[in-house]
Length: 318
Image 1 (cartoon, rainbow, N blue to C red):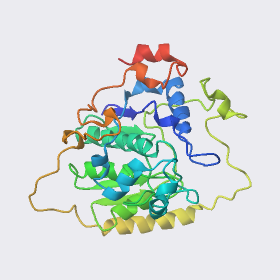
Image 2 (cartoon, rainbow, N blue to C red; image 1 turned 90 degrees about the vertical axis):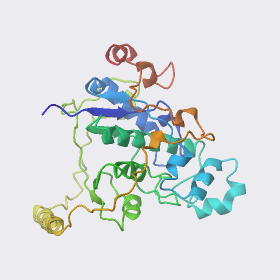
Image 3 (tube, helix red, strand yellow; image 1 turned 60 degrees about the vertical axis):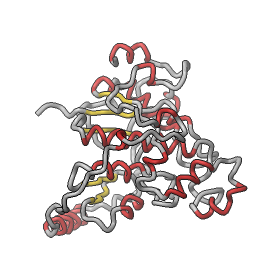
């Protein structure tokens, strides 16, 4: 068996959004991660794609239509006049989901990457897909939650279920994905599990020393990839405790029924085969987007200034 085919999705605009001063969610970190991918030369081991902006129609495959319509209209300039709806959808000044410029556009990019990833997996074009702008697992059907407005994971899983009897969703965030759990709570076709450990899907070892890049100073003072844990914190994950959890998990899995069967019915088309959304916020969200087209090296960067290492990239991609 050869190495897995890894696809990486990155949009130059995804790191340009800003939740507001003091907010812990910082999309700019996506750009930092992207520059590490470039300067560790990891991009040479995988295919790089620029995701489309998911249309309102695609997002409404899970989210309530009135909520999606609200996200398209709300902005810092309209927040006051829409205060009743802002409160209804758990957003605003006193929520962890503020109204910021481009909130719907940011969600479109996040969802588009996960939809494109699901398409490639369904078509057997990739074995592993990476969308760092995704993973917004707290968003509910008609409510923002935990820094998340659109649940790209649920949208991606819905695409996967068109081709696969079951989906195992593994969450590696600090918090469990309550939005994903709630969306599939009453079905036995989706199982959610939570683990909190890193891994290298490219089977490449990278140095713990941060390579010089556009954002090198952000890693001061240690300039290390992995942070040392605080020695004052107790590790409560004792072996006996973990073994007890493993036994319980295996027992539950043993009692799991076989894959569900359903009556013959039409399978919904892939998202990209739908009619173009004439009211799409961005032309990249149109249905003629091709998720099989690799990104050109010039699309790796947001602007002319953001081009550290561009010559190396140009040699490797397209």
